[in-house]
Length: 136
Image 1 (cartoon, rainbow, N blue to C red):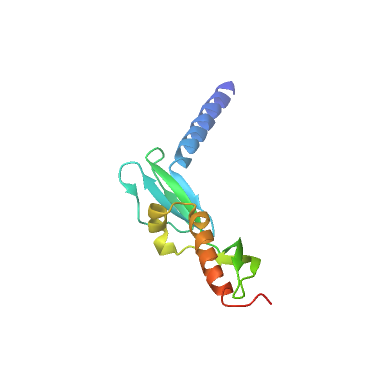
Image 2: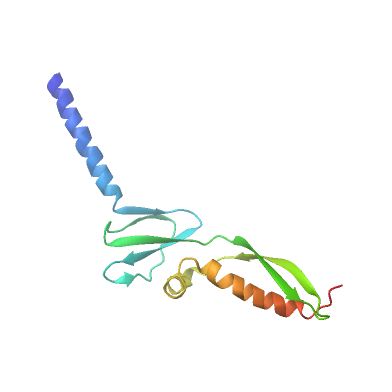
């Protein structure tokens, strides 16, 4: 009976070791996310991976995840009106990236595109709109 438990222990250890190794070759993309693969040899892959389970090479490929659900952000600004009064205003923006453009976004801007692009763009548009009206 002791030999049976020794074999069972070895089999359990082998199965758990194989399971741990096998999980390194799989990545899961959750709902509301998209993923890109950055390969050490070929660079950024242009295929956008949707929800589900996908395969990867553990050391060679790394995963970059993007949230594609609509996200809010608040951009505060101090701007002038038509009658030259200073107004403090905050603009709430709902944004989400275009799935097909994710490789271009990651290549050109980076994964923190929302903090790099949105504030300057929103300030410019907000100032041009507020400048058309009086403070009252």
